[in-house]
Length: 585
Image 1 (cartoon, rainbow, N blue to C red):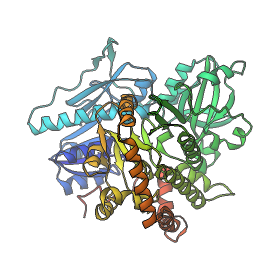
Image 2 (spheres, helix red, strand yellow):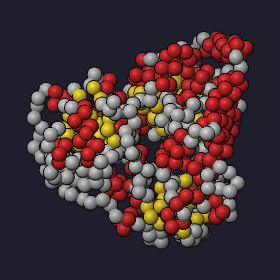
Image 3 (cartoon, rainbow, N blue to C red):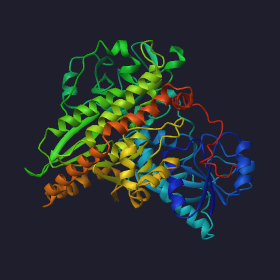
Image 4 (tube, rainbow, N blue to C red):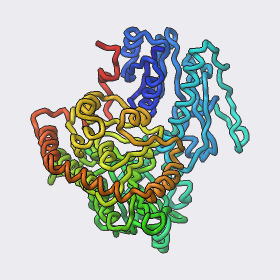
């Protein structure tokens, strides 16, 4: 079929559907929802059999849905209506939710149902649920709807106004409006930690919870409960007070514990330059400087929150080390790279045969931290170019440390998506295993034609060869993990749930550590690294890549800085990039 994707932005869900539908032989084109007239023009140019809208913030114009079959992907079960379905479900801690593919008509979210799929909710942020459970359910429902359309099967009747939810009786699913901040508001003196987490998790990503810190208005994001030593240390502190910091987050006391707040967005009244998300301690740098740092060991219980954690499993002589680094949205600032480098060096001091690099649950890595770089543009002691340079060098230091690890086998495990430098950080390991639903964007050009670094000019050709490596870097489209495995970019594609992936890879890693010929494999690895270094040192690859990046950061072409500014400030798109809108000349 000819399928036109209409979306507000080409986000993780849109990318997953695009790659999956394309892999099944459909002709795909994308149009960003810029205006009604642009959508009408796209339909006239592409002549789609069906328009699928996986992520919209406006209604599809009547002129379009009357002329083309339009299927809307709604993140709620049949009968749910309104623009904040997942927000309400997270806030109300609904035990089961779903995704519905319904036909656009004159009523909002009330057209005939073409397919739907359900999933169990877990205690997580809206963004995490959206990237995992919602995306998986949406894929199932969209493929089912497209199959039904291809088979000329009619849709179901319009959705009911009530739907039975497993283990929860009958839940009314009539129209609910966008959630107001009054419904999200936190009463720090009375709300429990669970109630506060539900509000923060339901607003994560966008729009955040409107609140105040240090007397300044802001929006809060990225919440984690205080547990372990932090919870014990909170005893005796004032309810509502901000008492400590860790890994860029601020710890705020609640009536029955505490909550780590990882990200904030200052109100625009405090200056337009601050009106984007930043690590909480960076947004409130002077105030955070007066707070104690409640650090925790790298090796600790898994319920104690921090961005980095290390643990080991297996018998003596065949131990497996596991290093996770769960950075918000996969972005890695200079300071986060430095902490990861220190953790990697510490892990290498341990007597292990296999080292697993687990990234985060939702993202392995997305490379340099564009929001922290943008913040540097507004500091008198720095600039966006200078911070970009610091950040890319810090990323390179981590990749170099991993490439130079020749005394054990390293495995990068992609539990979630990876993009730009994050893909090549994974390729610095000996093997790359990925969840089957992971989406990779192994290119830099979408961010103002960045050249890229992280030793990609060394790592990519050794897997794909020079010509296929150049071809992959020229294209700017997302890759499914299965497609990446077929081309040799990944070594394994694991068909398990993202939640179970961390647990399920351990037996395979233990088996790898116990293989009889592991010493020979490690010796061969050392010989190959030495031979590669003799042919061309890693320092040469880094120098050449950084010479190109230096022009991106400091040269006369401002494309990177313009693209970064647009990305960070979430400015609306003025046009659809031509690599997506193939219907446009």
